[in-house]
Image 1 (cartoon, rainbow, N blue to C red):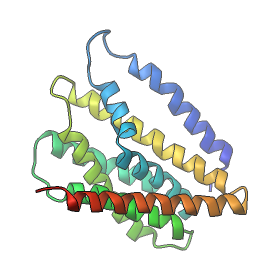
Image 2 (image 1 turned 180 degrees about the vertical axis):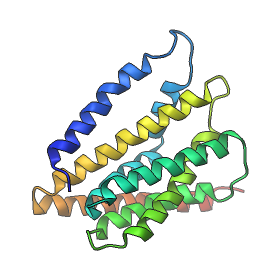
Image 3 (image 1 turned 90 degrees about the vertical axis):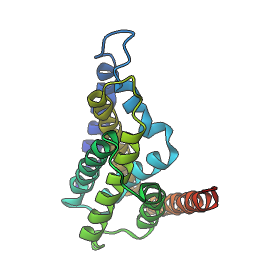
Length: 202
């Protein structure tokens, strides 16, 4: 497992790059980069799921530290392409809400001997659902490529934030317990999202 210093360095690097990337488009011309960067942050379901992926990757440890985020981002990019092309992919909203519930629940129980490949498969499925939603919500006035680049960078930053949170939690037993309580809160949020979706008029 990497040191807390390494995780913090990655987070600082990504956060330092975001402003420079945001300024990389012609002034006054909304190319979509900022839209993409902000999209995962302002959607609570996206925010909770992506931070949770980073937390779980640290809890599992080993190769999972980078495998889970990379699988999520890869599947998310694939889903975004499908969404941008308006390919019909049913059940994605259910997948997004379920991802918050399941990832939150995973934070409660995850440890290095957990079921890494089953969790990886679920992370890939959830990434596909989240990416599809991103692609469908692409503003028509922006560049699809830069919009996709923006939310990939934003997602990576949230994964790294989750890693740092999990690494800090390893410092004290009570912090680890607190992290699992936070996981329970995330799971409850996911359950509420599912109830709200079920109650919504068809």
